[in-house]
Image (tube, rainbow, N blue to C red; front, side):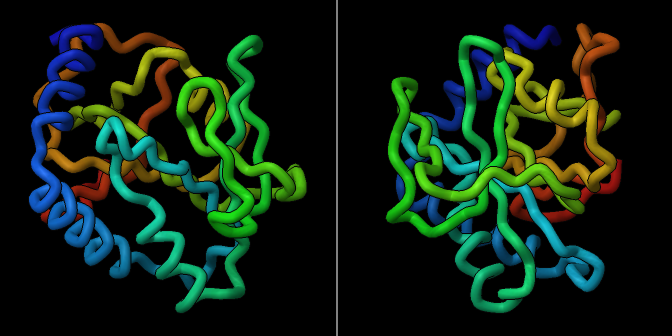
Length: 186
């Protein structure tokens, strides 16, 4: 399937999730996330969820990390839609977040992070068995991931699809993807 078709279907499927199922899938994602080895991780970049689009609730992961691994620095993105680039800021808590024009939560006072990042938790609508992902189509994460040497982990409420047919040279492969039932090495 082509990305545009996959994107349309994945958005539709997510929006059809009732609140109870959505909550359960997020709890299962957290359960899988807790099994990762964080012993060598100093900095994690993690996206903030657009809950209206039923993205995985990364606040559950952030809360767990803050309690069990307070030594890990949590970084969250801020998007510039004119340049299609992101800046990365220290996470100071939910009180520091404000929705932008696109309804995406962004940090307001968190200091800019320009150092190393060990692990990136990446949003996606779908992913395939080869490790490629379909996002919203703006390329923010592909541009960001080109320049860093971090472990790349996607979060998906659904299992992998067989194959994305229109992958291109700018698409960055995931190292792993966490689903509610497993962690898949790609």
